[in-house]
Length: 446
Image (cartoon, rainbow, N blue to C red; front, side):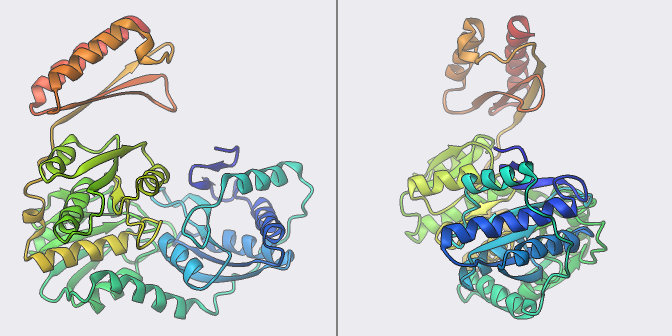
């Protein structure tokens, strides 16, 4: 992870370094230079943005920088992150540039770059761009107006790609509520589900540049749940600001998260003989209920570190066909290496229709286990297995849980805290166990 680029590109307060106009134009110039060195010709880029008020200016600064180096660059306008990734490969661009801060509030923004394969920009190129920013030798240029002359056609091509996920299944007769998070899906999602025949109510589809993710979308499901219950709809769908993730609520207003979505889709794939290696990739945060439910079907849950980057690495490393996170970021490598909330929603809804199941029936066999998370202040972050008392207490606890529960011990990446997470069959039992282990950690490291 570099100085300016994190695990998911650049993300910062819009207008402040490194997302000020001058630095963004330098990023555009640097990107074009390094791609030209690699390709031996001037590169062709496509960009797209979410609905934040800062998006057009940042995109214009990228365009100015890239064009100053002779690169060709077009904009797809307001479009989802996976939409840019799709167009990059489908239309033969050398890279796709997304201006978005995903689920963050409107004051933030970000830049991430996709290769035609759908993979994110290689860390080595990010380091070269960082070096160019720090050297201060590239002249910044003033932002331009992004060239959006092709945007209309791009939208239709992307929607066609999404409709294909239904595999010919009509959603007629299904009544849904869609929460667009006042973000990148506000125009595309209603068009998509209307074209598949669903009856729908749409909420949070009037972006004003500042209301993206504000009390809506996949981080705030209360208004969606209320609307589903009040309207008597079959289910609700919530995207985040750039629509790379999706969460659902059933007709009773209960949340159906990424774990439950993995269950619905992987069990249908297994029944159809399409879960090729009988594996599903999730993260260390996924509920043990998913692991136990999948095991009952002879399916193995492979756990990756938290982050879609690590889920993708594990998917490709194990040749698996489905993986994802509790947050609703689901990846199907055969379709795309990028999580796409709209594609996941189409796959999930068409699966329900094909099987004649309601959302609550489809998740019926997946029992979420109670979970407790306790934070313990620590003076130092020694590896737990190097502290004999902690290692012994943790080993004993894991033996007692014996496959019907799970212990996850880790340090916070940003604070002086040890995190004790336990899942098990009984809430009061795991609370007691977590408190006891937390006390051992406090005595030895607090």
